[in-house]
Length: 496
Image 1 (cartoon, rainbow, N blue to C red):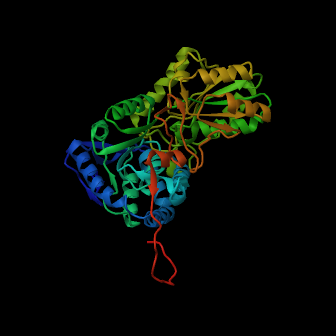
Image 2: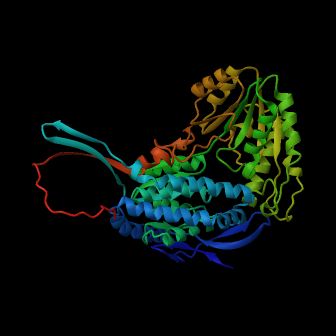
Image 3: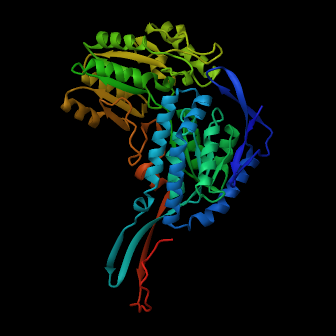
């Protein structure tokens, strides 16, 4: 069986560690490959390669960096179907969903292509007599990116293109559950002209993560994952003197007011609750129905769930399997817990008949009604296709419920009342808000990130925050004698 290795200094490598992990096809349940799990020595080798490359790459002109990013964008765009196939084979999400993931990653690459504008500094002439001051931003050096299993392409592309465009070298540690897409991205970056060592990929588990957090050559760490691990990464990285942005978990609420279009709201709840089998940090997992709409809304959602086809993502199904057998069993245990706690199972995903092999990691869409905040299916981030309906009597009660939750990643409100929507976006304590938009993931030129237990650190992903995270500011104050210029050259000036 093939072994998926690492990518260091511009070439594939098996690494020194002999530890291995399993990679599965979630739709069949069969092991598809083995993956090398990096040890501290493997991580150190990748960081050393990045340090060597960073010294030259930081001095590369903005024109050269941009040329590489444009070439990389063209390669990813031309091969997007290949990336989607790899995502589906190792993660399990359906091909259409995987293609959407690639598209959102492409948007960040395109944002990074405009890095000359994003890195512009300021200039003030004559702050004192014949004295000028100006500001600029410079790269940090070597940065690490630790990405999760649920978006093996999009999340690395939230960080890597921006970090590279800013002049840094990167060590990427993707999830060991679906590692192949990250290796393809690294190979294509090299093909696009990125110098060897500027982007390195080390596969691994906690041992590799700890080695990156502790290595003195790593200046900053970007992480996406569960809240407990995000808190750990932030604390350990900060203790090591690193800049850290650690994006954690979520419990995203969708509030439906009585004046909302209930058909639109039901469509949105199904799309946002069960897309990617609920394995999204922006998935809607808690639907807050402001009475008297709950009965009608639950009926509409259940009817739509009944038309969904769960199965192999390569067969045109609507929802695929969960990523591993262990995760499927964990989510199934939450369904059992919800029933035991008294929630009403309107649709029980354990009864699904999948369009796929029996060994796949299946669990169908699950809908609970009459959920209360004390139940584990509401309190915990399940990260699966489980949608909980909570009934409240007023707008104020809905906002109080959302703001009392420890997470603050994303939220949405469905209403035709502009005043209520404006009030909600102002009052809700959540980092990303959608108005009649169930998954308010911002475009690449804005920044992605939540509040409260959904983010550890100060700066969000991509956009202006991403550029600020991967650079540090410098202010220069200068005085010069009046210069004398000479020489004639009528050629058109060019950039190199």
